[in-house]
Length: 225
Image (cartoon, rainbow, N blue to C red):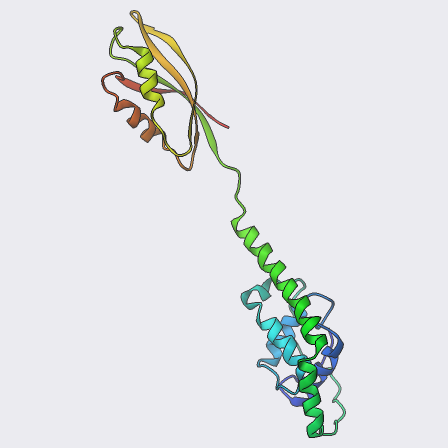
């Protein structure tokens, strides 16, 4: 990583500003932990006359907590190995104006900020997509045995009543009458439920509310799908 000297000093900030004159980031073409190290070392926004360093600082600051997800390994920035930069003559007043013009120039407005905006949008879109990406929906297939009170119960009517039970995440399937005992038949009916939405106990309770037809309900089979 390039060393700019003491970034708490004006000379160090100028060295960074000169370096960023034709670059968007401290290292490479995407924000990285090298940018974070220099950003934290500089500590505050550079003066307006350091247009390139100020543009870079504001851009890195805009990522907020997302900075921790930049690629690379964060190392503490050190100015110990940096040679003392040569003293530069104080810029004339009109040079200051020119630097301010460069800060608002077509290159910065139409290239660097635009590229940065696109990157920020893509990072935000990726983070949002990752945060809300749904996992597979857990479902179960259940075989219920609905038992009548006696052999005089209208089993067709019972099935009609059972199928009127509607819950978000519940889908009724095939059914069949099976012998129970003493000529009494039971209604065996399949249903598929979304585990997060449908409680089997609640489903059985709703079916048993048809007390003129249903004496009890048992779970005959329960399989994950």
